[in-house]
Length: 363
Image 1: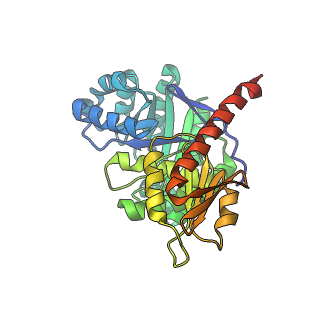
Image 2: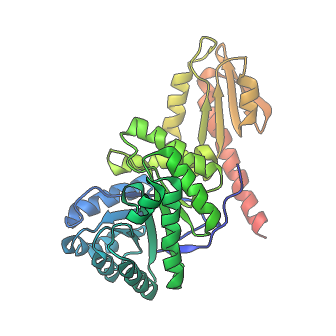
Image 3: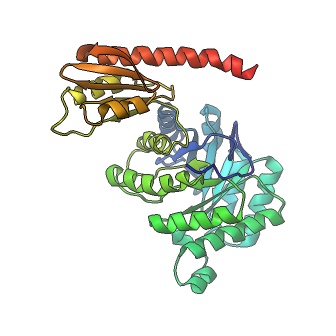
């Protein structure tokens, strides 16, 4: 994987976003924000799922009136999503939100954007400039003919220059499209021309099965190139379902690993152990585990030993027995019924070793 793109740092509440900080996962509530009780309940569900920044829509004064109460009840930063009426951004900042997301393409005028930026600078609030393929400025559509990667990148750079004119640098930028290729190319071009943190997402990706794949292709492709500082997987589903998908994309790309990665054989005629049962038990017993460790469970003699030895911990099994590997070396021979316990015991050894090594590394 390429080295991560170097950016400036943006503070969003208690978090810092940018290349020297973890890539953060966020989502958005689906409730009517004016219904503070329902919105707070969904926020709690998102927090429990591991969501690290939460965005709520603020289309009117009634919704803005809930923000202070929501902010007081949250443990993660609160983002106000603003479209059309810039005054809602001002009200949101007065209510204490940590960031406002505006789409300059539909906010009305450059002067209104500048007014939002001036207020954010005065209050110490971050701003996300969100460029969407569905709301590119008319002059850019006329110039490029369609919301192409060039049009999207030029739109984002135009708004970045406005931020720089206002001497405001607490800015995160996003370019989103429903088309994966357009989104990839636009973000690549933007990444080459600015050093602001980038928020990644494939907008309106769809239902969970296809939307997860589409998001993985688009977001994952950029992460593999070192691009991206915060992500959101947009699914037509309850928002808490987006969070594990987002963390799995980070894990699969090696961009951020905060739970074990499980590697297992595909089902085929060579498998000689009850692999599905083993994997189900391992997943169940590792629920909530945060140790970043790669575990391979292989069920045949063709690729099993080699692939098991490539993981931090691995089991290559067959005929009711398995070889336990640790760091590429065979360390034990175990019965199939004892495989899960053996794997978990090795995880605990790794945890203890890493905990012991941390103080030494700091000294």
